[in-house]
Amino acid sequence: MRPMQLFASKYLRAVDLAGVNHDVSISKVVEGVVGEDEEVKPIVFFHQFEKGFCLNVTNCKRIVALYGDDADQWVGKWVTIFPSECDFRGDTVECIRVKKDAPPAKQRTQPQQTSQPQPAMTPEMAAQFAAFMAAQTQKPT
Image (cartoon, rainbow, N blue to C red; front, side):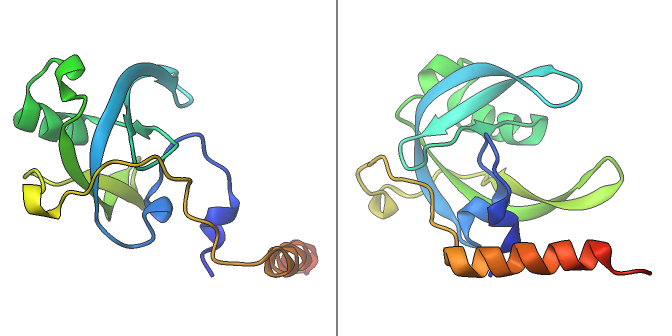
């Protein structure tokens, strides 16, 4: 069970990668306002995922190093994304990173829009988990 999959997110998260690397092709890049600070950041969409990937500086620099600083030229290009960990506001958190090298052409498959991975639990399991969490908050400490 991956309980973090139960929490909805507008953007692609490390948990959505199910612990494996993904060779993905860029379908579009848009600007998006994100976070509590309402920062404007590039949001990259991939043919293989429905959700966009909000780029931080590190991942943006990696794609710029691969394909240049004109995001319009990134469309159709391939990158490898993978789950990792990083420091964020003093905490170590799960994150997504972009590999420094583009995936070899022989590993690439034709892009197809796919739905997000399905949660690893049934609705019954989700209900049991919710009941368990509710019970935990009601226990005296």
